[in-house]
Image (cartoon, rainbow over all chains, first blue to last red; front, side, top):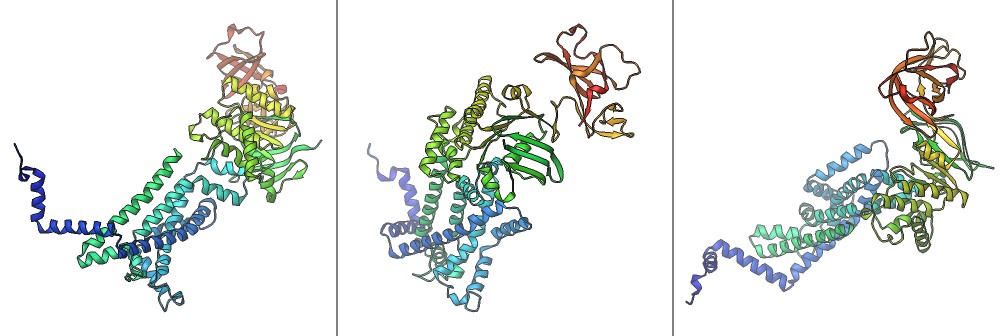
Amino acid sequence: MIRTREQFPLFFIYKAFQRSHTLQFLLDSFHKAFLLLLHLDSEVFQIVWLSITVSFWSTIFSGSVGLPVGTLLALKDFRGKSVILLLLNTTMAVPTVVIGLFCYVLLSRVGPLGSLGLLFTPSGMVFGLFILATPIAANLTVAAIESLDKRFMLTCKLLGASPAQQFWLVIKEARFAVMAAVVIAFGRIISELGIAMMLGGNIRGFTRTMTTAIALETSKGEFELGLALGFVLMAVALLINGLLFLVQKERS
Amino acid sequence: MIASYSIRDLTFSYSNQPVLTINTLDIPSSSVIALVGPNGSGKTTLLHLLAFLITPQKGLLSFLGAKVSASDLINLRRRVGLLPQNPYLFKCSVLENVAIGLKLRGFPRREAKKMAIEGLKKVRMEGYESRWPNSLSGGEAQRVALARTLALNPEVFLFDEPANHLDLESVKRTEQLILNLNRNEKKTVVFTSHNLAFAQNLTDFVIHIFQGQVVPAAPYNLFRGQIQRGGKIFDASAVQFDISKTTGQGTCLMVDPSKISFSTQEEFVNLPNVFHGRIVSLSLLRDVIKIEALAGEKFEIHAPISLDLASLGIGKDIWLHIGPNAMTLV
């Protein structure tokens, strides 16, 4: 017996999709999004590139401040340490628009850093994202070092490590957790919308990042570019976390 | 000969509570010294003090004739090698673990590696170089830590309970190692132990530590307390001793276990310092019978081996008489 196309159940589902306008629209958007990625559309490429470079530098800066600060906070005992830890924890919970607002005031023409002319530039975004991610990196580093074995510091000392050597040994010993801290900071930065929007201004071809572009395109009701960028964001997240997973697996 | 360490009127306190008080203690160079005492007596604290990990609040500690100053601790730590009771291995390969102390001392990478391999050979751990600590058994990890200490070739070795949790063969090997370090390399070795027999096997110079103080003999029957009624009564809270004929000064009363008279019948009528109790354990030491009796406090009695054992038994009543010559105040 010869089956006609109409006899396959999947074909009916496909037809049903075709008949529905909404679904048709969505399928079209997905289709166009894939085409944009496939053809390496210059606008998509530029947006992705800017997002990644801005996130990269923000992560580098916040890591190079957050890791030493976190290490010192974990190792040293001093008056007011708990207050600083409390403040650091609080900054992690501050809404990003508030951080954006704070940095906007700092960077605006009348603000104390206004003369640098950083507002609505990629450097301005890096500044805001740095303010966002540094407490995260510092806090996670404190947690990573405090979870080290109690005998660790004693062993460093009895082997004759100077304070600077102890500092280095600590970071080395907690490297897997510290790496996770950096990755988490990067993830937080690359997915950040409020600060990127307020300090970057979402200027096409200059400060438009993946998240600001997605927000804009969605509000315009045009999904294809947004979806394409959404896929890239997810792919970046998957890649970074996959790398971290591999490194941590190596340890055991 | 210059003493490796010399201690005068030293006090180390932990949150204002003195945990170690030592009037005089000298550790000669190229000697093997055992610090013996029960758990929590302050042995490890003293060992950490000798490793310059902590500094005394009061008193003098000198190392090879020079006073230990707080500004020079890092350099001093690099001249001694401490092996803790429960050592920690870093999260890196066995070879790197052994080489780490050498690298901290500024040895070039290649030389440090060579010395680390030598260290691993000494504890027969060749072939483990690229293994990670989490793949080692407890005994293997202990040996890696030992190799790490040996590779540093310090002037003084400090071992914290080296015979703890080891099987008989490993204990023998540890004894041999300590003797080799001392006899062949003329190193000073200080180790702690709560096992007097192990300590006496290795050295004649045993320092007894009890409740943070150096005491003149094995800390059997040591009681802390206060002297009352014009020096006539020593109150150790659970028992009171008549010390009117006892010489010495101090807050610690020591009762020589071999000088306690005892009987299983009610004797010693009208004598001072007679305590009635029960036998809680009986055991054979090298050349004496060890009787532990509970009479307010726990007393240890050493009786000659020729004693007729028939009348003794766990749970039986016992009367102890502690004469003035059995007691010393320290």
